[in-house]
Length: 190
Image 1: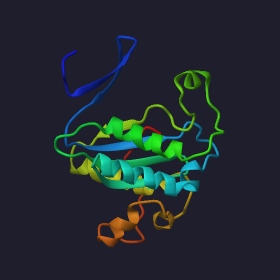
Image 2: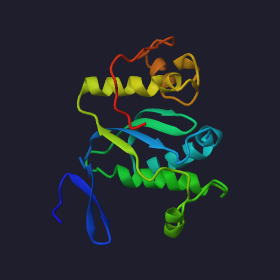
Image 3: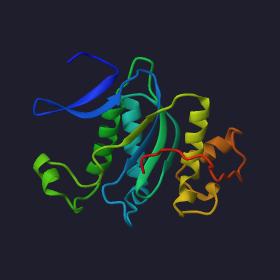
């Protein structure tokens, strides 16, 4: 297969229709979900383990987290990869694996996952979106920071602890009482 900006998944010698863009040094928006989202607070209940997995992967495979929010059952973030690197998929695999290994077993595991030796913690795939320009970046950063309010976890953005919003306030990018109705729809893979 020729090398291109698109990644492919190979299964039993066949290329599936699922492809991801591969652009070195690009900036990406991600949504990563737990397998069972309903009434699941696994990420915030185990926040230290998740932060540890993120730190380890950032150390071993550098990238910049531009913005992030960790909710009980999913994560939204924007990453910028190094100029010579496009492998965000491996980073997510390592983060998910590192977090999962730190947890006790006990989750529901489907037959197909069991056959592959997988846990039932994360959805297999994740949503990625290539950030196209400054306006696209701003909309996604706003979406990330507004997300805890959108899902009803807090009434004010500043009240959600697991968010880069506080870093943006410290830098003077947002006022501490910032909020938005997000008039524009952001496609976020939720």
